[in-house]
Image (cartoon, rainbow, N blue to C red):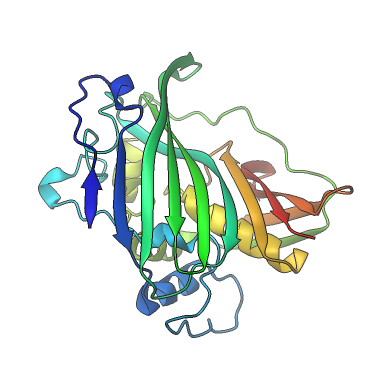
Length: 288
């Protein structure tokens, strides 16, 4: 089920307050696809039987958007102007977000999600005009609840690619793990999350149209890798998590996941690293 408020906004800023509600479910089969797409160990993934607790952030695959082919833009995304505002900038990126967790969602259970556009802000930076859209999601199951803010940024496509000013990799860390991104992993994650954005699997498009040097590693994939590794090293389930992309990561770069415990809080600072620079920054909290 997918219901939206009946408003007819005409400008992107008029979308503020627009809401929709949806039903969703993470099936055992999609859970298995996520497990092998995000796993970075040699051991086979566990079986995810209906009723098993859902790993954090996997609700991102529980609400696929069934847009027909005719509703897709050149980049493979559904065109804006439905729930999301019609921003006239061609590059769309998931810039970051923040989540809190209460209880647990479960594989196979019926989930509900209420979404609302919180803000639409136009800015100008070194990359030219930008529009930031913040969306709040409330996801609930029988015994769990997730509150989430999702930050999306829209940009112009540059004539040539330039990396943002790098944020150096942290020197002092408590743990680190390495993994290969690779085109197969990116394709599998796109399939598991029903993400048709072509920068993740169509290398000619990524290079020739959006001017990236290679396939782009999904922000949500990096976030899932970080929260899973951080929770494992903490030995505790997350109570809150926030993340922010600071530089794109590409398929041909070996990735490192690194973490450092904060000395005065049940929390950990995390980031992905490639070529000595940070890609995504995150902070994980857990209950004492």
